Amino acid sequence: MLNEFMKKSWLALVSALCFGLLVSAVNMALAGKIKQNKIDKRDGMLEKLFGQDCSFEGVKAEGAAEDAEPIYFVAKKGGQVDGYALIWTGPGFAENIDLLVGFNAGLDMLKGFAVMKSAETPGFGDQITLEDKEGKYRPDLYYKDRFINKPIDKVLVRADDNIADKHLKDEQVVTISGSTVTSEAVIVIVNGAKKQMVKLLNK
Image (cartoon, rainbow, N blue to C red; front, side, top):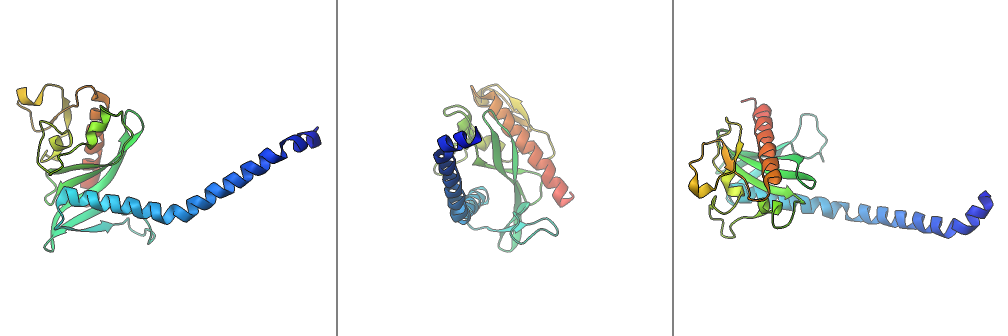
């Protein structure tokens, strides 16, 4: 019976093996390029949060391997610390969302966030990625801008009312209309990033 099975399925088995080896080879060949693309994307987002006149230093965990990912980043301007940032992840509506969250040098205010990875619903949840092309501050239009200059010592909470008709408290963030789940997911991730940053810097 086994011999009969092998006679009928050897081509499928060989094809599957060859395909697996091919995929593995391609992944190995492109691994360096993929890693560099992620670094370039991250560095570009750090520049958006802090400005192109800043330099960035990645801080790794104590005893980490040379090729280990930094656990947070220090932004410096003119040799002085201008702020900090880290990547924090949490569940979104579709899958996990990775955010790069920035803080000022005093670690008391948010600089904002940039989206490293998201697969939220087009036209709704993906509005967390939208921003003004000229870099203008527009909290009435862009969800990302509603986090800028929010205090770090307060837990952020959602506010559903229209931003133009509501006097917000410092800790309130107006959600995206029609995408409350994604909006709340971002708030939770940012709150988690704030807590972790304070812990890392022991402040």
